[in-house]
Image (cartoon, rainbow, N blue to C red; front, side, top):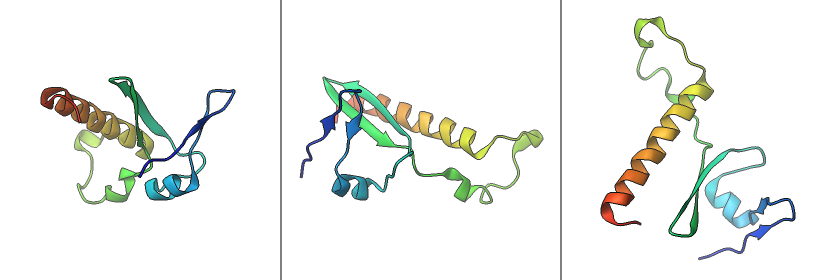
Length: 92
């Protein structure tokens, strides 16, 4: 099912409540977006990896990254991997 999204005079998107609920996003959440074949692709960045911080144990060599830095690095890598996979398969 598709949704109508409005672009305001300031270039902001208004996302319908049903779609926000499905994506589990709220005001202030970040998204990553790019254009592919003339279409806007947008991925919410609201899944904190800090919930998994105890699973892997301490970081190597005592290095410390903030939870936000870890989230950003992993999300960037996931998006890059997705883009590479869709490029190889001819798009999604």
